[in-house]
Length: 100
Image 1 (tube, rainbow, N blue to C red):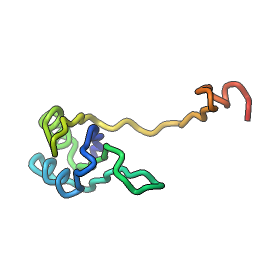
Image 2 (cartoon, one colour; image 1 turned 90 degrees about the vertical axis):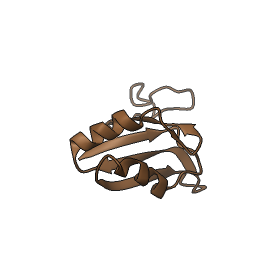
Image 3 (tube, rainbow, N blue to C red; image 1 turned 30 degrees about the vertical axis):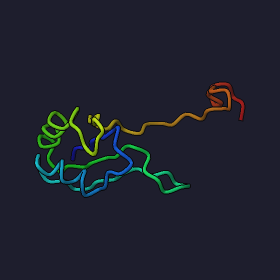
Image 4 (cartoon, rainbow, N blue to C red; image 1 turned 180 degrees about the horizontal axis):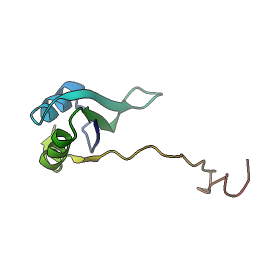
């Protein structure tokens, strides 16, 4: 399974338009356009899951830098979430400074 990050999406892009672009490279399992939890408005990026890694690699190479809905897309393999740091209001890591 290849998880792909799609950045610089137009706020008008839909799951169907993103899916259509990626389906020309292979089977798309899921498209998730990330939205703001308070407003419900798109945040300008999405994740696409493709079931075959080689098709996902082809999609990344073929779509990165292409235009969709007037925006030039940034497409690459999504990185794992990893551990999220906690930031204080000054941008410092509270766990590192032991200030909870």
